[in-house]
Amino acid sequence: MLYLLSQYILDWAHGSEWESRLAFLRLFKYITVRSAGAAITSLVFCWWLGPGVIRWLKAQRFGQEYADKAQEAGVQHVVDKKGTPTMGGILIVLSLVLSTMLWAQWNAQVELTMLSVLVLAGLGFYDDYAKILKQSGGGTPPRVKLITQFALAIFVGIYLWNLPAKSELHLLGVKSVWHSNLVSTLMLPFYKYPLHIGAVFGVIIVALAIVGSSNAVNLTDGLDGLATGCTLIVGFVFLFFTYLAGNIKAAAYLQIPYVAGAGELTVFCAALLGAGLGFLWFNCHPAQVFMGDTGSLALGGAFGIVAVLIHQPFVLVIAGGVFVAEAVSVILQKGWFKFTRIRTGTGQRIFLMAPLHHHFQKKGWHESQVVMRFFILCVLCAVVALATLKLR
Picture (cartoon, rainbow, N blue to C red):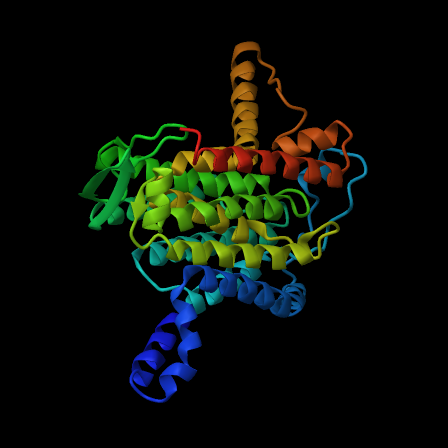
C-alpha cells in the first residue's frame, strides 16, 4: 500500500517543483527499507494492541482452565498456568497482516503466503475454541485438522503448478533458465545443482512442507516463549534466503535460484519477526498469554510455503531442527508405544514424555532452562542453514 502510494505521488510530482522535495519517497522502492518498516510497524502494532487483546481474551474467558500436559504428568516445579489467556496468535496474525499490507508490494507469492496464514489461523482459532468449550485440552479431532491442512496445501501446490514463473540459476558463468512453475524444481542443501522433480512430486513436497511445518511448530508450543523464540530464529534465516533469492546479482554470486518477486517475501518475514518480538514481550516466562494453535499453525504453515516458493524446503528442515526434533519425538513415542503394545501387550515409551521439551522437564530441567537451551540449539541449526549458501 505504501509502495503504491509513494509511486503515485512521485508520478504526480514528476517534472514539477515538488519532485526534488518528494525525492525521499524513492526509498520505498528498496526492499531493505520496506522490510525495516514492516518489522518496526508490526512490533509497534503488537505492543500497542497487546494489552487490549489480552484483556479481551480474559473478558471472553478464552483462557486455559485445564491442567497442561506437564502438570498432568506430575512434572515438578511447574508454574500453574490455569487461567492464562490462549488464542494470543490473534495478536501475531493481526500485526503481521496489517504490517505486510502496508509495506509489501503484493504479488502471487505474498498473496498465497497470506492466504495460508489466515486459513491456518482460522483453523487454529477453531481448535483453541473447541478446547476451551471442552475444558479438557481435547480440541478439534486430528483427522479434521489434517484434512483441512492438506486441502490448503494441495490447493497451493496446484495453484503454483499452474502459475507461470521464471527461475534462474547461474553456475560457473552459465545461466540456466527454466520457464515452468514453482513446484517442479527444488534445491538440496550442500548441493548446487537444481533437481527437476516434476509437478506431481512437487505438489507432494509442497503439501508435506506446509502440513509438516505447521504441525511441528504447533507441537513445539508447550512452554512459555519456546515456540515464539524458535520462530524468530527460523524467521531470521528466511529473511536472508528470501532477500537473496529475490536479488538477481546476489543469487548469481551464491549460485542459488533467482525467483522473480521473491524479494517481497522478505517484507513478510520482517513483519513476522516484528510481530514475534512484540508477542514475546507478553509470552516470556511467566506468560501473560499463549499463542495457541491460532498462532502456531499459522506461523508453521507460513514457513512451509515461503520455503517452497524459493525452492528451499529442505533448508527449512535444517533451520527448524528444533521443530523437527519435537515432531519426531511425538511420532516415535506414539509409534513405539503402539508397536510394543501389539507385540507384548504393554506399551513402552522411548522418552519420559513427548513432545521432547516435556521429556527434559521430567528429567528435572526447569522450564526456563529447557527454553534457553532449545534456543541455543535453534541458533546452531540456523547457522548450519545459512552455511548451506556457501558450502556446496
